[in-house]
Length: 405
Image 1 (cartoon, rainbow, N blue to C red):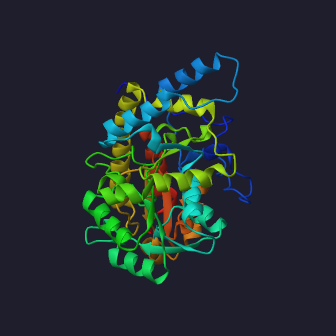
Image 2 (image 1 turned 90 degrees about the horizontal axis):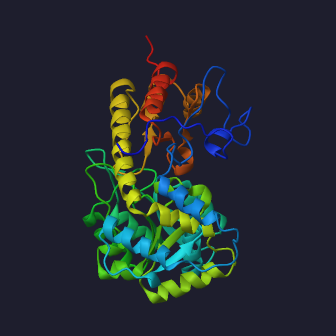
Image 3 (image 1 turned 30 degrees about the horizontal axis):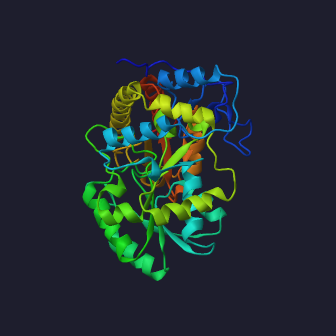
């Protein structure tokens, strides 16, 4: 490979919550591992890979100029987004007018909600549900109504369209949040699935907020379909949220963007987002996106997705062979696994708290899945060098999912 996805990067002391955000006693933040075990960061949803070099190059070149005053986004910023969406996602007819800056995807979600709903109104989401949605939507006083995803006979997560329709009608919902690809389940929705969902939203006159932040991280054999691309109606009722942050490990720089084709939706969302006067682009985050969306970035992401596909295959095969009672639906996108430990816990008389702690004790820093509305769930980040993934699962085999003799 042209780029390095095997070096174990030392992030200690470099402002990384994933490794430095731990406590001695587990109060307020997860506890450090027991003596003798180093931390394998698999809980925070950022990557343990160095970003594509053109990001640093673009930022470094801009930093050479000593003034960082007020600015307008460069024409190049919009053109790089247009080119990226055209080449990566097959988007047609995207113009700079439809693109708007967002400090973050969640900020864009809230701006859209404020434009089309009032506190106390109900919002439809699928569950398991990304905790960022739960936190921000709940904090702003909206009522969350969850339509559970269901596994089919092959263990693939599917939407329940009848349940979606019934709950939208029962709760008089007019704004829905759609996660494409889905976090935490890792589903990359097929076109026909999105079409059916959009028909439900259309029939109930719902504005759709489509979180597509994971859309670049698609595993081998799958393809991302933008929600706005499935019909003219979907194009006009959907506010889509994107960012280079997940793709290129840039979350600390802050910076996302929306695509809104419909001028009525766009004007309302932009009016809501402007009222705080804080939804403003950082000049260095602009250059980070420009650097990321260079030709090298296309190559880098293609290699990254091959690496992630290999990590997912290793982890899924290892779980199937060594952890009977731990189940999961094999992800099709993202770099997260979402484990279901219910059968294992009940068979072995363990609580999910005991399982989680046993992993943290030996340095496997994974994430409690209960806030995602999964009672026995654990979310695991696989965006690490394969050697680190292998070490983590060997520790889980030896110290956590131990079969009684």
